[in-house]
Length: 107
Picture 1 (spheres, helix red, strand yellow):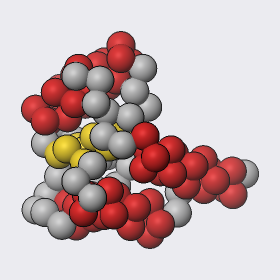
Picture 2: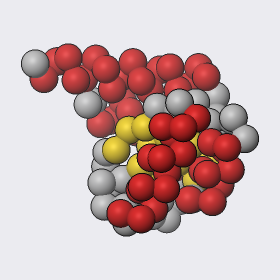
Picture 3: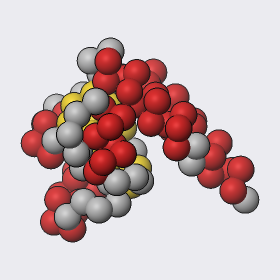
């Protein structure tokens, strides 16, 4: 995955007010049908990850597990963040495309 482009796009979405961060806000965005994409960190706790991944599966929201808390937090302009929900279809589509292109380049 092209980390710089992906994290920059998260930064743009955050500045546009289209990102919810923190476990409770992300859960609310998923269950409220506002989340178009959820990004969680690799160092997230297993119980929190299971809760978010189960909700994403149930509500059919794409989930990407990548980065560290520090990297995701820096992209959002906040202290450490372990999860975010992208609440805009356009930003979510662009982020998924970046992730998809980067995955194809590795093969």
